[in-house]
Image 1: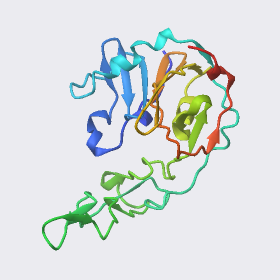
Image 2: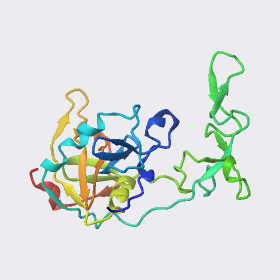
Image 3: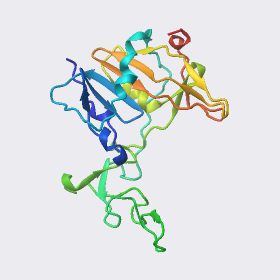
Image 4: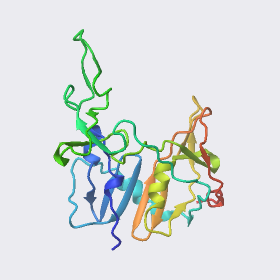
Length: 234
């Protein structure tokens, strides 16, 4: 069995606490943050979680029905790394004492809430390298990486759009990495937005999904992927 670290695929957001750890369902173990997900053969040390979405099984159920092709994103460019300004590159901070890590507090008018003035809504303040590990709070702005999240958008043929950082996560998995040629989409009659289906990737011992971004007429591509594999019919 190939050893894959599932933790990077988990959520770091409190409102998605049910996705903050890998979980098992049936014959598989999953990890997801709601935008990207991965499935590997069930691991004995990963328990089930009754709060985890059972619907994730449906998303992966048809993964084996598609035609897969070697993923070619040679023009994705170099990985962009800019030090996170919130944690100053450490990946963690200290829980803000004024708001207790909530990022907001009651307004003086007592009828609303506002961003905490000490942490500017981040929930943490700069900690420094000498702060004890048990007092550290993972930086939500950079997902604990110490670098600003790469929010650039990569666009494939037919206006299929995905975050560059999620593509890099898939490409970091054991290869060869293949992608299904899924071109099916729905177009909103009212807004004209294009909704593509979840994109499926496979490699030895794993299957991954990326939920594409909604493409609108005002969207712009940061990276254009000219890949012949997606011009084929699934």
